[in-house]
Length: 78
Image (tube, rainbow, N blue to C red):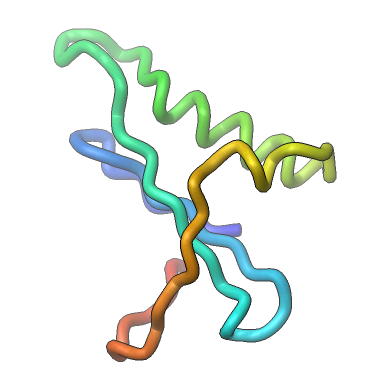
């Protein structure tokens, strides 16, 4: 699993289940007040990563995963 946290707008999460065609990504919007430090979107990302690490069920259904298209020459995170 890879993460890219942009604390201004959103967070990107990626995971892979096998080969390159099984590479997925999800974007989670920042959800906080501009003057606050608590970000509900980041908390959601933390929960998914902790559940993934602990091999708990449900982490994969917690975010709107989409296939990651690397056909445009872009590179995955990490």
